[in-house]
Length: 292
Image 1 (cartoon, helix red, strand yellow):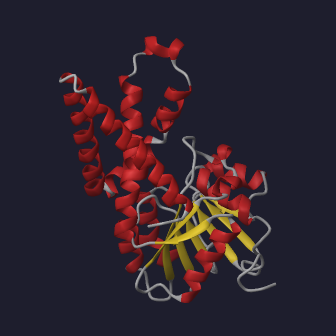
Image 2 (tube, rainbow, N blue to C red):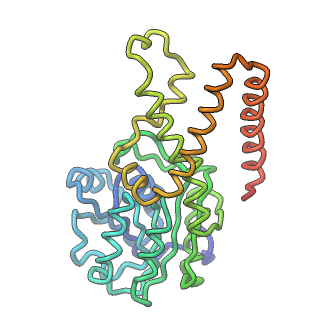
């Protein structure tokens, strides 16, 4: 099989830290495509479930000696957990492994990757997909289909890591988007992290008495409100500065709308609402062209 095709992982030992939604879905996609697939997760129930379902060759709550000869290590855990894993990776893997992460923010992770011993070949990644639900029970390998797959190389990233990230993106049915850590974090603050905060706020501000009248609009705009608080707290902590910038822009926009309503300036309000709708259309057009 060609080195950059479906057989790329054949003969490789791939280890996944995290057997939740993302790690579990990844395990499904890689199952049967590598010589050994190892899962590590602090939740013993996730470990038992992954083994019972045959998603991995071996699994444990701690890596122990399972990762000593790993060829590819993929960190599919919350950001702060990824940072802890990176600090201890040298002690559990003695091989010259490629290290990828699926973290929601990239600056802190890439800085930590840069501190790894030189024998590791690290690269940041972020599949731009997911669900508001979490855990192995909700894993689904099709969530990657058609999604953008952000690839964030470090200065030290080698060809082996680049090729691994690109092939993984293709195998998952995603399309690679190369981007630097700072730009990634700034853009996802506006496109992912701010929507979570707005969704959560809208859910909080909606009276329970409105339940009989809620419909698709409420469901779609508040879907993110039930995302894992633990995961989102890591995101808010590691991307605080640019999330605040996005949040301030949103508050300023809502303040303008409030002022126009108070002034009964409906002509101006209509123009501002049209501008918002047009920006949404432009985002759709840019997305189809994968423009950054």
